[in-house]
Every structure is written in structure tokens, then in C-alpha cells.
Length: 108
Image 1 (tube, rainbow, N blue to C red):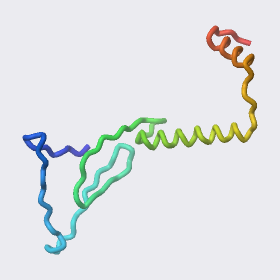
Image 2 (image 1 turned 90 degrees about the horizontal axis):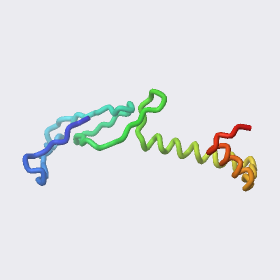
Image 3 (image 1 turned 180 degrees about the vertical axis):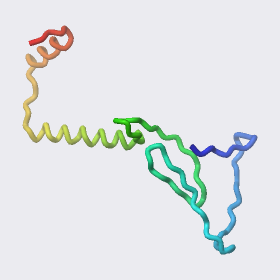
Image 4 (image 1 turned 90 degrees about the vertical axis):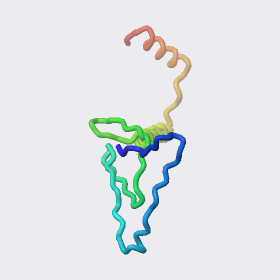
């Protein structure tokens, strides 16, 4: 991760004067950083650190927001598939039997 530059006074803002590269005829260099999920971010003005949550799924590192987005899309597809199949809802008797099997460990 990229460290955040801090002053001795935590409440003070840090101002870094930027040189005008166009006037000097200098081409600015991009700062790059590779995230744990493999994505690369770059900027000409420098990078600041941000807090992100990464999780591991099947030995692959994912940013949590991307993983949630993918999971929600899969749930949406499942709901749409069940709705398209016209599966009737369970009756009260079926719901009761499933509850008994689950909580009391009864097998068929």
C-alpha cells in the first residue's frame, strides 16, 4: 500500500507545490500501483491510499464490491430462473415438514 503523507500536526493540510511541466517542456511520469486483485491504477498527479476490502474466493483475490456485485447478479439470475419455471410456492404442510426435518433431524 502507498503510505499517506502526514505532517506533525494531524489537523493541518499538506500542500505540495506542483511544477508546471508544460512550461518546462518535461513530460510528466505516471505513478502506478498494483492492487492485490491484480488491477493497476495510475495517475500523473500522484496516488493517495484508499481503504479497500479484498476477499479470497477459490484462491483468487477479489475486491469486495466486485464480489458482491457478482453475487447479486447470480442471485438475480436464480430468482428469474425460478420465476420463469413457474415453480409453485410450498404449502403450509410442506413448510412444516421441512421445518421438522431440519430442526429435529428426521430423515425420510
